Length: 189
Image 1 (cartoon, rainbow, N blue to C red):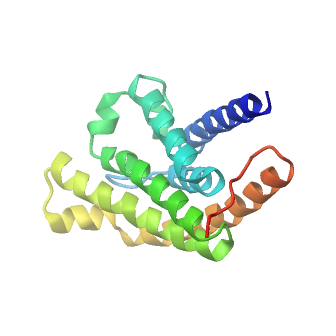
Image 2 (cartoon, rainbow, N blue to C red):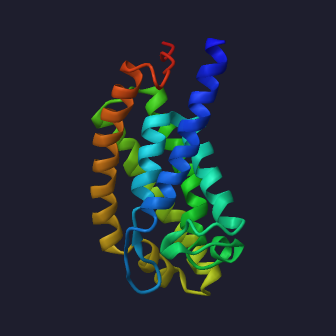
């Protein structure tokens, strides 16, 4: 019975994080071509709190919800056209980013320094996917795609979001674990 309750609890938390990603996606700073959104902050939070498996599942659920027409992407947009459009690479990049953030933390420890390193790597993964996708989807040169995907404001804001996701994520993860709401497995040596 306890194991069933734990499974239900983690499924609910995972779905909740898919919703949190959709909510934070609506926090937008409009820029030409690619806006700055709260999605990456939410991706970092999900992976930092839930780890590689459930963090990635929450991202997949979020993308699936948006792809089938629920307006969870930035600007309350939805549909497969968003996923394959010019900003789709950033959305697709959330999947490996969440996995790598969680994986890194599971192999080190869930503290601020490791979370900051993991979230910075996750940001670079997302921006790399986004720039590569921009090149193809918007028919840009590599220079223009890299400038559009790795614009200096994305790096600065990305580092701020990585720090927030790290600080809040580790704090929330520890509190959920101590309240027996989130059951964490011990890292094997």
